[in-house]
Amino acid sequence: MTNLSSQSTLSLLNQLLLGIGEAEMPIAITKQKAAKVLKEQEEQEEQQSLLGMTIEELVDKYGALKEESEELLKNPVIAEFESVQKELKSRLKAEMDVTDEAEIVGERYLMEVSACSKSPRKLDADKMAEIEKALGREVFLKLAKLAMKDLEQYLGKAMIDKFLDKEVTYTETRKLLVRKI
Image (tube, rainbow, N blue to C red; front, side, top):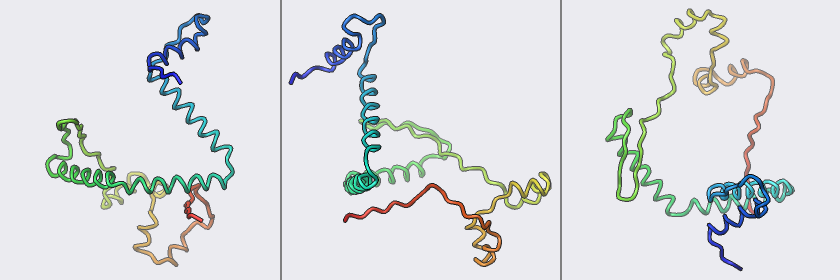
């Protein structure tokens, strides 16, 4: 088997695509383009492979991959990375204002630290009556949303059941539990 360099492989691919001089417009394949094309091709082949499997075969593949991924998570490097990340975040929180940005230069790496993300805006609960007045009662009631967990703090189950919509709907989310047999 001949060991071709990356450059000669790209040259060979270019020659094949050009039909060795027959094409009118030259096509250049860079390493990045070749890698992207190969990755897309592998993804298409994997998808075709999955489409050809029975649901039982997919269950077996899922179980094997889940097992493999759980083993990878047991790697001590992952635990050490999480510890270092936690300590780094703790120190940045202690030493930087939430609006500060920074570049921290180590011996081998440079880290860009952004400002903290803004929290979602919240309405002042004490201003609800004013908001209702500004919108009008009908519009306010259409816009008002209550979370079930919030209602559960104030009302019993029997009272909540009285107010629930009786139509049952389902999400597309399912819990997948896989066990080795």
